[in-house]
Length: 492
Ligand code: SF4
Image (tube, rainbow, N blue to C red; front, side, top):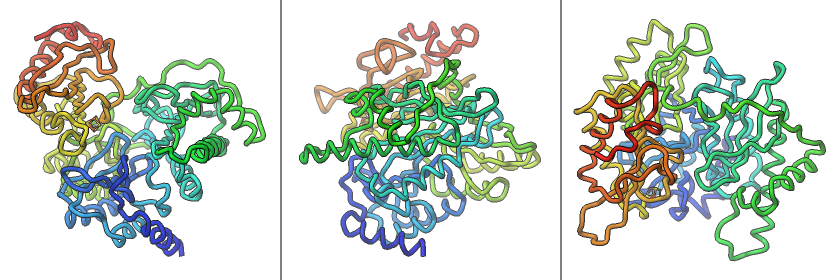
């Protein structure tokens, strides 16, 4: 019955928007058209995908796609196909749980959680049940379809692999007070790409969903009002526009009125948010569950072949829980592996052409779609990143991850947080001149860091990055990261 209702919903939705290719943000039901194919985004709440779902996806990728699957920085999957996906494929995806049973909310941003939710030794609470309940709430509230599809919610359970610094509209961060677990409320009031800010509200864990629902409903009412006021408005307002318009206090007051009770103010809490992550999820790690381990696998630029995804899915089924976890760092975890199987799993990952080392050059390189996948791109970031990674692999043994971020323009879609080295595509005066980047290192006056070259030819980047990395490794003092080390000041 449930499947039939979902299908009817899909059919009704499909009459109007079956794989429309007009949306700015791609989703499964609103794909975008790019130079390298029709791009569909598969929304996987908290990045969980079962091996059975992998098989269903791989069939479609092999039949209609380019044989490649991409992980995004919100732990979605993206596929590129030569034609729009048919109603039958979309229905199959719904049956496998790869698409929402309610297509009207499938375009909302993925619900984010730490990839180690529920298995992290240091987590205060398992957030996966919250993600599932919130997703169910969205599915059952089609009136939320008018929200900006950038509306985003994140749960951070206090894991070592923290996601609380990721840009989200609403972030709930677990804290323990007097042996009780609460969630501290953060709202995304800053500029694009900025981490959300604490708003001095503490929510008991049992009230999290009703508060989240009230926050969302007030935002929906605001959206409806704005859309009604201005029929020519091309896009619904972001939550941050409401916050700037009303201020946080008025927003929270409206939420309290809807709830019928006052929100609890948060006491001063230690600032530990957002500094726990980096690349610690790669490699072999003990889980909270006794005698079980997870393995973090490096996925080069978040892209893997259908053969590799199938192989990882098989490993998850044979040796783990039967599910893979995609990370916002565009890598994959295989969980629940017994110690005696670690060697075998590691060997088979290597046989798939993948590494588990956090010091592998690809472990910390991020690149946006670039000119092959985005009309705004000024450079072919993907190809340039591959050349840099290959040169690093041949020339230097990294002793810690160096985060290198390629961005095809100033928008910085692939990574919002600062990197060790940032390369930003620049507009060329002469279209026949070779592609070039601005080069930044470490912290600095701009979002990308400190500019050291205003223009650097793409073809010369591999040599430059190897030299920068060498200077850093040779001159680094104690445990300092690239960001605060002397190497940042050195032009090569
Ligand atoms: S950063 Fe710029 S070039 Fe890259 S995907 Fe975003 S808009 Fe396109």
